[in-house]
Image (cartoon, rainbow, N blue to C red):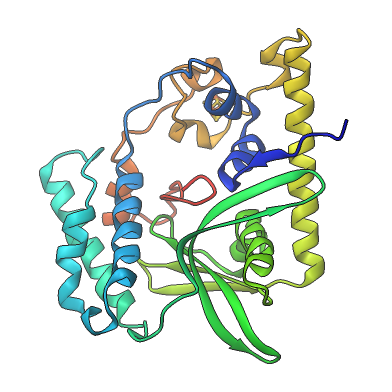
Length: 290
Ligand code: SF4
């Protein structure tokens, strides 16, 4: 019998790479352990992402900055904030990010896809993922597709972040096959700083990222098999404690997480609204984990 393909998204693979135990809590254990309260930074990221998605649903003639307050209000997620004052400040800041950002866009240009699901199969994976945006651009050899990922969280993203993102590489790999045109360029659009961190992949670098994803999938399959064969689930999916425990949805369930100091649901947003030099923050609403 051929092996079944491992059905996955970037978030699923990323969860295991970050911490196998977090993967188990999120994707295997049923009933799933309760998550902690919603995070304000995820609410903020989701609100901005959805407002931008709806921006592209407007007719080109309606893509004007005056539309943004209505779009943002309609998609606003108010969970996790400390209080109404902080939420209002976050709304105003997000609106400012959007106004600056859409000023850089050509209102007449329609992307190839907005929050578009791209899927591809390899020898090991049945991959699918939702790219924030896939642009149509002209390259030296003709039409190309470009993966665009919005970021609203931590600042200081650079080309290394774009190069190292397995999620962006997998989107590019899949988009190239879905749209039948080269897709090598991946971009992180950081709205708070109005900066773009980009990387040009090669077929070889995309293949390396696919191989790495396949290796992760094989590790997950082996760990799941260990459990189904009667092995200890805690050993098959070990904890990987670290700084990210403070932001983990399963901190209250996980024995190592419970020992780690936690963060308030609004802490990352508070820092983003009043940045402190050197403060570490989680990525907000990363597609590979929001
Ligand atoms: S609290 Fe830390 S060690 Fe526990 S599941 Fe979450 S990330 Fe892993």
